[in-house]
Length: 122
Image 1 (tube, rainbow, N blue to C red):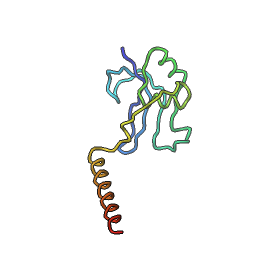
Image 2: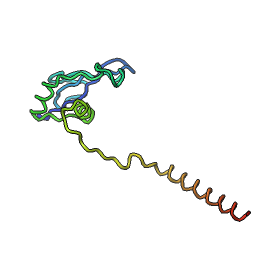
Image 3: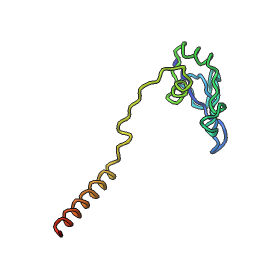
Image 4: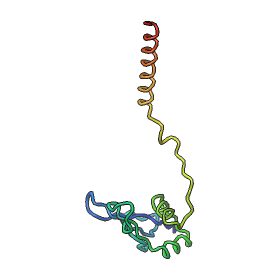
């Protein structure tokens, strides 16, 4: 059975609230879970202690049993100091799309023409 430590969404529309749960990876996101390990309230300020609450003893138990944390939970565990920080690299994230690159090239070409015309006028 592939275990995951993940978020299960609760709360009403536009008011998210999450439970941190240990669940079988085949179960639905908000469906059946084995154990509730904590809560996450994204509406609270980032420096609030109430934002993320976890039972670290149980989380460590599930990690020792082979449960895999999702990306968001892994980041929370890194912030809590339970896991070592993983190196993340997404070099393509910051690059502009094709249309934006074409616009930038056109703008550069127009600027070069304007500079050339100004140089000829002198």
